[in-house]
Length: 343
Ligand SMILES: [Zn+2]
Image (cartoon, rainbow, N blue to C red):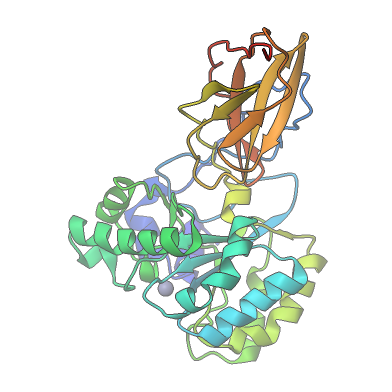
């Protein structure tokens, strides 16, 4: 099959033909900084996402991978089934949240720790599931931003840059409007179980056998519980085909922002280092040199209290953020500070 017929068979013909330049070409990974001599390994499979391209597939990798993405969430019962799957089977899923559906709020307490750990990722599927190509730039942005704030307030995460336009309806106006507010990565799909339609379980299973594969972005829904009847078989298929399930962040890791406003201050016999929070950072590493040897301390918040500083020795600090296992570059060195000996 040529590309036109492949895309047409996915129901993406019109889109792909009208916007061929939007097809993603992920660029190969570069370590965020030289890590020679450090214990931190740079994952060679990390791919830096090239901004401004529409994603249909995962980037090539030495490991066989598939991203299972789930849209909508009109069925709370089905959302619960996905969450049970994540909790029991250690699978990694990406949900595209249609935020005016009540299940996203009801299940927020259960979702929050799974999102914080990175096992579940959330992307933006807008507030009201409208065809964005029929809206003005302002309306498009409002649809995305309402959903954005919902996720920020309920899950504590900034879901950018990933969004999926409802119905897969996208054009250059939608792409531009979304990018202007940071949603620079429209996510389409390369296979779907078509489970939002009146399809039989046998039909869903046929689709699964057809599409579960390497580099596939698979689309399913949380709108009825039909597909949950093939979950067990699906996971077997995933492992038979040697695939690892990954989230979009796993596959398209963004380079995290460098912590800013890094500041060190002497308080009594300690040095207190503070910095501004980096979106989605789970931990921070604080670096300093002591007796000619570089030391690293891990912090979970935005402060590190260095209580073992030697009096009259100057210390300088650098901080980096860790987001879903990807480290940022280090901040600049802070000016030297020292503690004075106790009187
Ligand atoms: Zn949808």
